[in-house]
Image (cartoon, rainbow, N blue to C red; front, side, top):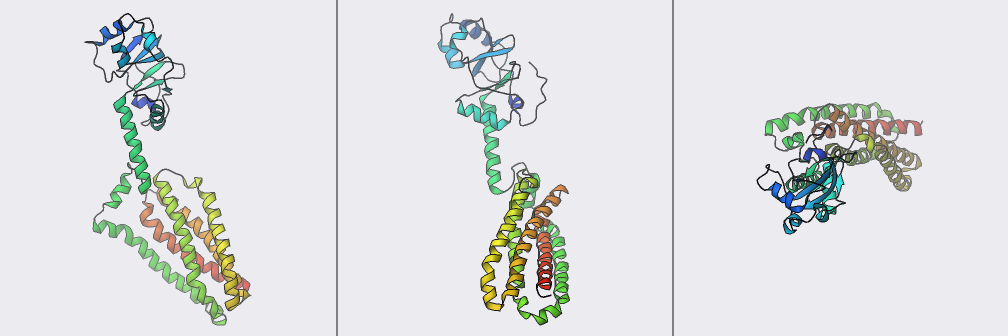
Length: 323
């Protein structure tokens, strides 16, 4: 028996077998048993599919077939309402349905009611095992079948060095650029030295927000979750964190060094946190699209970009506030 349905590697039809016992609606138990003995080699005989004009009428457990008298009609011992699944359904849906219905096999039936095959017990166990592996892999941050993620965890020393060094070199260049940004605001710092006190804090908070977002995005990419699915929520999260942290910092800074610096720091925290969340999403996505492991490059590069932008935002806000 063949099917014209195009099967994906994880669809129910790819696990279905036609090498299973078949009975016809008008047969009795003895006729079915006689045909099974010495007949074609079967992949599984756990259940017998009862058909009429190619359409599934029910399933008979092998235990019921063997324990019934020969002259009993096969329809009398069959389950006339067995659990079925569409050929295109995902393998996980097939496994869940089989477990819920307490069935060792699962019938695959097309939209027209025609019998496609049975997913036998050993194939069902294979599906459950694969789903278990995927679930465990998700908990560890990458898919079981992700060869790139596994290879990165096992690389030798020189490959580890080579994959990381270029991005750290970019970071060194960016650190020099950050020093240049600070130097360009030398007069402002000389006039308001207290602004220098908060540069490390602004940079740290932006980095922390970005790191949290980046970790979630890299994990999501490793399990097939697109960046677009989390973009809006992560941007709003970064914005919300910046607003709350800025509000919390404002009273203490205003009491310590004055309201102008407090406004500068609070506004910079809000803006830098929002921008950091955006950078932390954009870079892993770009690396993934370029077939580059985001675990190596996106972290250092995101830190560099976030630091530069945080410092630039801080001094831009300070220029406006103290103008």
